[in-house]
Image 1 (cartoon, rainbow, N blue to C red):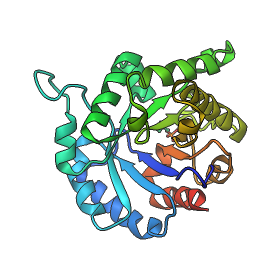
Image 2: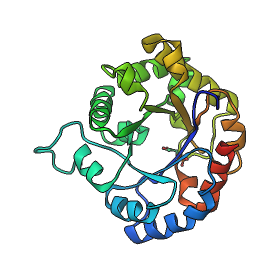
Image 3: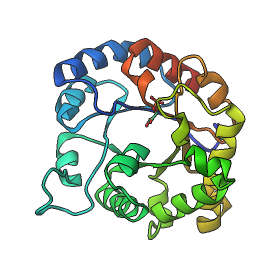
Amino acid sequence: MKKSVRKAVIAGNWKMNNTPAQTTALINEMKPLVADADCEVVLCVPFVDVPAAVEAAKGSNIKIGAENVHFKDNGAYTGEVSADMLLALGVEYVVIGHSERRTYFGETDQTVNLRTLKALEKGLKPIVCVGETLEQRELGYTETLLKFQTKMALTNVTADQLKNVIIAYEPVWAIGTGVTATDDQADEGNGFVRAAIAEAYGAEAAEGVTVQYGGSMNAKNADELVDKVNVDGGLIGGASLKAPDFATIVKAASK
Ligand code: 13P
């Protein structure tokens, strides 16, 4: 990462794991291990775990995020959660457009854009996920796809709002598979994302945007990944469920 212009962000994405009691225990275990971090430390947790997470993280350097947010203020949207509800609980970040939501829950580039706009309007920091499938990569569409998803997600986002946006490049084939992108593949993918932002907002604005890598990032490979100039931290799934592993990744990004 380029420390002169960007701060690394290490964010855990717990997905559908941990009860509130487990949340309290895990964050209490993590707190002392990440206290010296020289990067932003975020845990994105299931909605029902947010109160326990905010309470446990109080007074520490751990920020709490959610895993989704709806694009309307309120109304007849059964099962959905609004930005105001999250803000009222102390949430600061929100994952938007994760590939699991795109694959299993009908998330589209349009709804990703709407959720991103709502999050920014309300003052939540979106962590917007983009990434190609293995088939798209093998067909040679990685750059086109990443640029398209990035630009679609940022439609109508102002240059000022862009400063609060994090993009996470998560190759779908690397998520939960144990197959990590090589550090060069991660750097290249993140570079495509940054190039798309530069095309839309100019090179200087793009240089300031945090672009994370996500996909089987772990305690063993984090050092090499965050060493790459375009990799400004990570969005961590499985390894964020184990305090020592997560702390090792935070340490790698703090160097
Ligand atoms: P894994 O780290 O478990 O591969 O998950 C990555 C991810 O999807 C983070 O959002």
